[in-house]
Every structure is written in C-alpha cells, then in structure tokens.
Image (tube, rainbow, N blue to C red; front, side):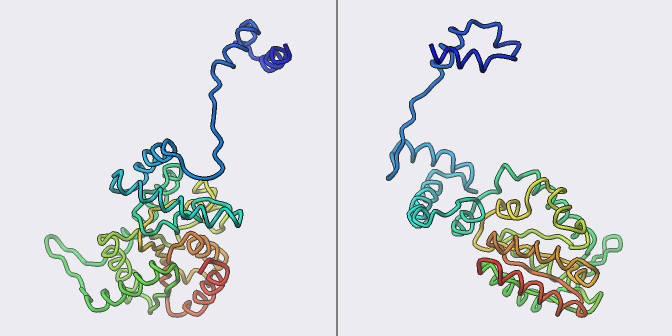
Length: 283
C-alpha cells in the first residue's frame, strides 16, 4: 500500500519505530485518527461547552457565568474581525475584553515574574515613609494623591499617557507609587518599573524577558484600568529615548495607559517621546 510505504519512510532512522512491523505502525496511526468537524459559521453547543470550560481558568472569579459572558463577547467580536481578515492575538483580544477581569496568560508567566521583580525592586528603593524603631513618619499628601490617582485612572481606562514631573527628591516617585497601590487595591492592573533598571536596548529587554515586549504586556491582567508606571523616565536624556519609546508603544498597543515619572529637566523630552508613541499606537 502507498500508505504503508509512507509510514515505512517516516520510521526510517528511528531506532524504536524501525523495530515495529510497518503494518502494525500503519494500524496504530489509523487507530489514533479522529474525525474533526469543520464549521465555517455559527457556534455549536459542544464548542461552547468546551470553550467555556477553558475560559473558566482565564477569568479571575473562575465562574461558569463569567466565562460564558466572555465567550459570548468573543463570538460577537469574531463577527467584526472576520470580514477584515484581522490577525487575532492577545494584543487585539485582551483590550477588547477590558470589561472582564482576566488573569495573566499562563504562557507568559515567566516573563511577568521578571517584571514583577523589577516592580519590587523599584518599590524597595523608593520609600514613602521614614522609620526608626517603632516610629514611622509619612507625609500623607492625601489631596495630591487623590488627584493623581484620578488622572492615572483616566489614563488607565483610555489607554493614554501621563507625565508626572518634579524636581529631584520632592517625592514624585513615592507619591505615584502610593497612588498606584491604591488603584491596585481597587482592582486596577498596575505594573511598575524603573527605566534605569532595564537593559539599554529593546533587543536586550526582550532577551531578558524571553518574549517580545509587546506580547508580554498584552498578556497581562485585563481590568477596566490597566497601567504601566515607568519611573526614572529622565533617562531619555542619557540615551534611553528609543527604549522608552518602544516600551510606551508596546504598552499603548496592548491597551495599557502609561504613566512616566521624570525630573523636571527631562519632562519635555519624555512628553515628546510619549506623543510619538501615541501617534503610532491604537489611541
């Protein structure tokens, strides 16, 4: 048989398969085949049940009800994506599902663990309070923090950018991180890092993460408010202009708002970089 000949050719060079009779290998191959139905339009109940079961692992509350709503939304979105032959990936899908709370993509969890480490490093290096024994001193600046949290929320909902600026050592980074913590406590998805803690180029950053930067950011948690806080953005004055641009562009294309914290002397250059990224991003 022609099929036997193909199986024999495929088994050549394999020490294990070459010891099995060709007819036996052909039978094993045929017995493992399964009939797959091709459905060009519409959704079958079997498809829906399987998909909802899978989506339960993706939604934060893990309920069938929420997973079913996500499935229904995806089915509706497919109707608009299909006619335009859209390339459907997480960069397209997750921003469209911002009304649902979704976990991070499991396939990008190692990269996000590295980003989480950068966030911890930033927070450990910027203290919002001074401590001596049991005494803790912190300038609350409640009014400023509330106002900043408000504009950060807007940036996170609309996928736009915000520049927080001030002279060195006035507490702009600490204030921004405290506002970010409050938003996270309220359910926002917030990632933070310092531009100075990253490798010097996007290629090196992607090597560090093991994945394309845009794909990693797109695979993050999905919430109504999604933010990337970039501290030390004045590093653009020291040769990090392209890095900030690509980082901001990747975040904006993934539907995240970008909050850049910079010294006053770097504010204009940072604003220019973010405006350039916005002109290329889906905003």
